[in-house]
Length: 288
Ligand SMILES: [Fe+2]
Ligand SMILES: [Fe+2]
Image 1 (cartoon, rainbow, N blue to C red):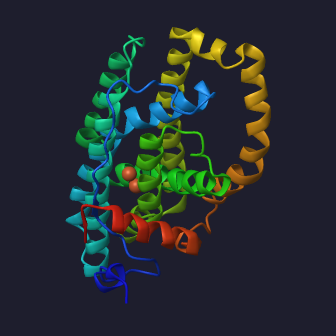
Image 2: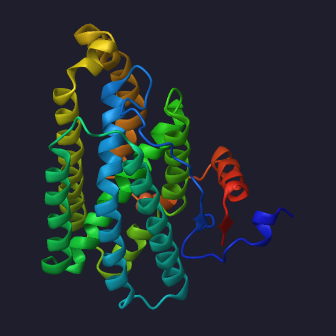
């Protein structure tokens, strides 16, 4: 029996694989060029937009789960909730390390955008209902589940700065490990398809707007990056190459999450992912 199997956390609510809480030792060199995906500033800035979002979003998810825990009696679901929050707590701390290592001096509007996002999430925790906040959490989790599956399917971290790729690979594996948790907690306390759909869509619009605005600002503030990568023609060629993959591999996964029959329990945690999860356990400073 492997070390990972021996220490596998107990399961569980429905059927899913263990949710491991790993302490990772990522090392980010200072002054990382923001074009983190070679030859692709648009994809790079999108990944940076997501990385800038997470230190505000993930603490908000943790605050939401802390509130939700008061209403959860099932011991397995409480264990899931604790592991979910522990994983998210590790994620945003590592993303802060990356964000601090990136050379973002050329982008003066980023601090203002982050401050507004921070204020939004603090307001949601203070003023919005727990039901809204849980539907928001599930909107994010459904989107990251679809995105993580898409990313691994097309091998999209190829050509990415190795430290950034390592961070995203770890994060996306853990997003898939805990893909059922926000859904189950929303379902256990409230349930209700239409509310989940409407406020999940709102969440995706809210997060997507931030990432879109970051990407747009970065492209505008440093037009040389696009010039170095083939100019307008290069940008069009990248879009033409990417769109068929998005249409075939990503959109169907995302659209399924909008169905009343959607449940993340139907999404398998495939063999490749189990292998990656095992490798992450080996690489981690510790895991439980
Ligand atoms: Fe996360
Ligand atoms: Fe998550």
